Length: 372
Image (cartoon, rainbow, N blue to C red; front, top):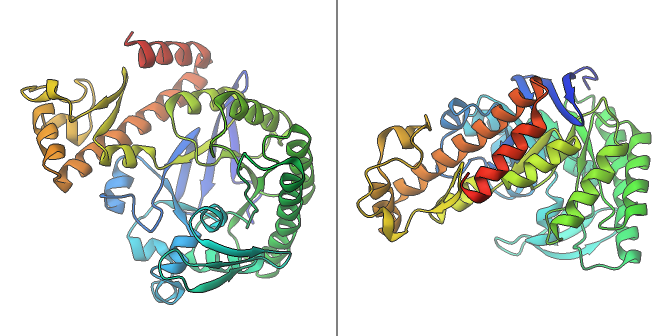
């Protein structure tokens, strides 16, 4: 594994500018990764996503394992060739999907036995098998199998899951070393909302010396205050010389808060999911494009946005597409939302480089929530 792939360029208070030197090009951080869960960022091709500026996206081990399946991915020599995306790919381990989507039979020391949410077929994920699957997928950054718990579990269950995650992480690290993979392996911290478990999780994972660290088990129904508290607790003790990845978080205000706390990487389905429900992100907040007020509106979503959608289409037309259920509407709103997030991250990077991040954050949020 490449131990020198992460380079910090500037630190503004706790916010960090850095670069990830990956096999398929350099990635600037803080970075947002669109979710290409089953091999596609919904409604867009790999080239379109790359041309929007995204040099890394997320794909999902659980979903790719079930469909198209490992035989297909082996035949294509990995998901890059299969999905025709030329940037870098990070795959999560599938642990979240096993616990949230499938009919889980049992989680035990060996691994997880579960039923597919597609056809009910029985499968098993072990820490070693999840590494092997991601090796076949061919992603640049991979995640170990972890045991996720919801925020409603008691301390004893959270402790049991966290300790199992540590034991699985150790097996994952040993296995990736045994197969001589060059993939970058992150550890996933757990601990739920319990501070002492979070601290213990981080300390134990740091002893295993992973290439980076994911803050897991958040954005699963907890309050913002709890989420921010757990992020701050984590970044305070995570290694300064390794990337920090906050899993599944994508609201602009959450990204800005987490960057201020020292987070480098994010992923979320929000840009494309909300686009499919007729909602777009703008500097002045979210806007619902089915609104009657757009019926005769000749303006774009945002006058100063350079995305393909804003450069070519009126709000009236976009409203028409969404009301009539045309797939083109889903595509055009997704393009705008992804362009919005790419611009947000670029502006964040520039603000940190100028040692001006807190001012930028304050001004952005003032306009975003209050229209200026």
